[in-house]
Length: 199
Image (cartoon, rainbow, N blue to C red; front, side, top):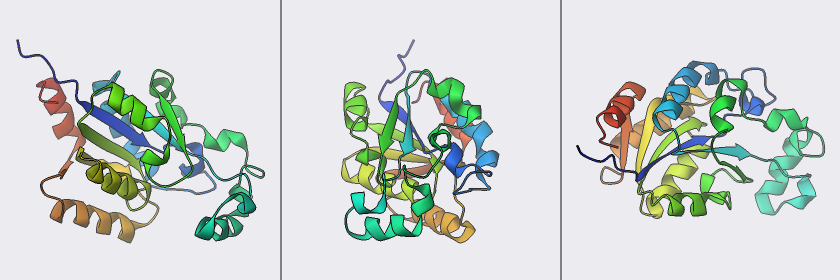
């Protein structure tokens, strides 16, 4: 019997109440990808890490353009926001309760101090990326993962964005660039690869 490789790891980005269809930064498409993300969490049990985007305490706690960003979104700073908005959505909470959760204050998952030690400890060389947003945190994470030498698989029916044009533009980049480092897969294709012990 061929032993399953333990080098692929699932990154589920920012599936928080804050970005749910009823959240303050609503992403209407999140609900549609949650069943696929749940299926991937099942396939990657023990090999999944969730991230949470944590806003600044207040605008003046930030630097450069982030200060202006939080002046625009001052109602969503830690001083103003309901802390429950930062929680992982209920649909994924059973999986998040059994997995590491890495908090970050920037778009890229690698801004989370906890992430690199988790991936290094797992000897990960392939990252399966799901979550949101396709053209923001997913994009930033994908580019940094490539720079760090990881093979990246973006699950195209398990990522979402509040911007339809941005989502499609990012998927176009993922399809047509970084051929040696990045691939697009569907949830079904990915789950089949895991079942066949190819990941």
